[in-house]
Amino acid sequence: MWTSFVLAFAAAVAASDACWRKIPRELTICGWLAGLTYHTFYGGLWSAILTSSLGFAASLALFELGALGGGDMKLVTALGAILGFQHWLLAIEVAIGVAGVMALAGVIRRRRVLETFRNMGRLLAYFAGNGLRAHPQIHVQNQSLVRVPFGVAAAVGTVWTVVVR
Image (tube, rainbow, N blue to C red; front, top):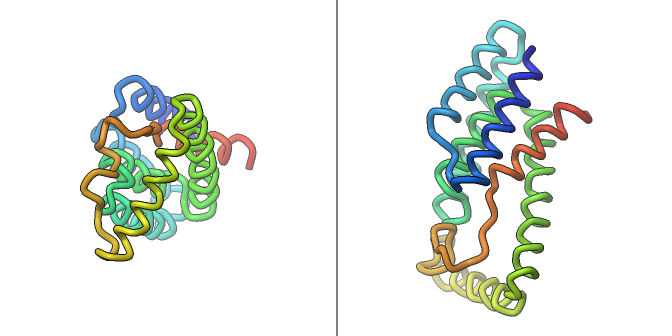
């Protein structure tokens, strides 16, 4: 039953982010609460709480840098509560890999390889001169840049973890 919930949650996240480029707050909050409730009754509550907190802290740092949106941040936090540490770590590793492949495909398809390398250099120079702060133009909210729906990648990572593990 729990596996069905996790798969349905992942499918809802992927569909929402792919179609509307938004992960609803209500969805992530329900996932977070469901994860904590499940682990309260079936064990692993402290792992779920700590993993959720770790996910929040890590994704908050990326949010502040402009690398993740708010929905992605809440999703990473909810997945911590749903999956617990070991499964969450694998799901996030797979998600990062999938997001990287999606980004590379988008850059190649839109023929923006050179521009992307230039932006990476600009980001590194900006960080070197200003510390780890969000760049004024190179961030996830900039519609002109190649962006990928991280919710789709996170869903793939979650499904991989739940089905293949």
